[in-house]
Length: 264
Ligand SMILES: NC(=O)C1=CN([C@@H]2O[C@H](COP(=O)(O)OP(=O)(O)OC[C@H]3O[C@@H](n4cnc5c(N)ncnc54)[C@H](OP(=O)(O)O)[C@@H]3O)[C@@H](O)[C@H]2O)C=CC1
Ligand SMILES: O=C(O)[C@@H]1CCC=N1
Image (cartoon, rainbow, N blue to C red):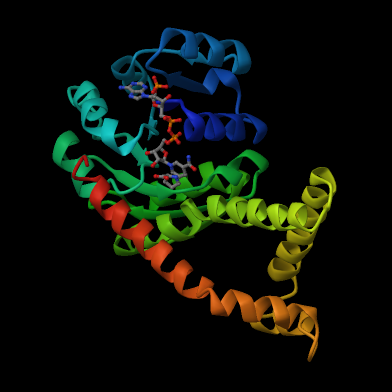
């Protein structure tokens, strides 16, 4: 049995992914804070909705999917359950395995940073073991997450950087799409047409990047003709220090991830 504690956007994305991967609704229990949310999830997915302690007792694998600011309270609700033989998987940004162990005791914990493309089975999930997690716990976590995307093991010291890169990454991409569509509007392109063009250009470029084995620099150079249009645009991006803005932005996200465990 798998329990998802705190079934919001990320918890629901994981829940739907587990069901798409062939798990039965009978194998999953979930929890929500608001009764109307619990009822909506029960109707949509056919899973049992329980209280946090009850769900934690029933399951062998417990996925913690509340916001970092709600983690302390959630852990206090399940701390009295005997969890030593279970696997606790946290998907919260910033929350360390030590934070969880300090509240639950000597429990196997795996820290995960995934992202919303879990909804289309294209997640990037990075995983790190806590002090009491073994190879078997890491394998179980990989088995759980690999049907919904790619899974990579990293040292926990790199989790905040991964959160800033791939956890938040989809948001930077959607922001870039918004900005490019606005540029199309400025040039008189109808909005729907601009969105279709930008989206397909991004999808095509993403697939080339993933599947060609070529470095992004050489893929960009292949688009950039001497004296042409692309270099005119890139000159403006450089003038506006867009690369430096990305370095600063992603560093800020990493720093914010480090802060989250302190409840701020
Ligand atoms: N969104 C994203 O792209 C990503 C998010 N994450 C991480 O996933 C976690 C969840 O984020 P996200 O899904 O966006 O946030 P949401 O707010 O959508 O989900 C959290 C859910 O937990 C519920 N909740 C809070 N406390 C309790 C409790 N004590 N018992 C039961 N349910 C509770 C909330 O209820 P209510 O609805 O009443 O507030 C909410 O539905 C965060 O820790 C975040 O860092 C990681 C990677 C990507
Ligand atoms: O913005 C956040 O805090 C979460 C973590 C990674 C993506 N979303």
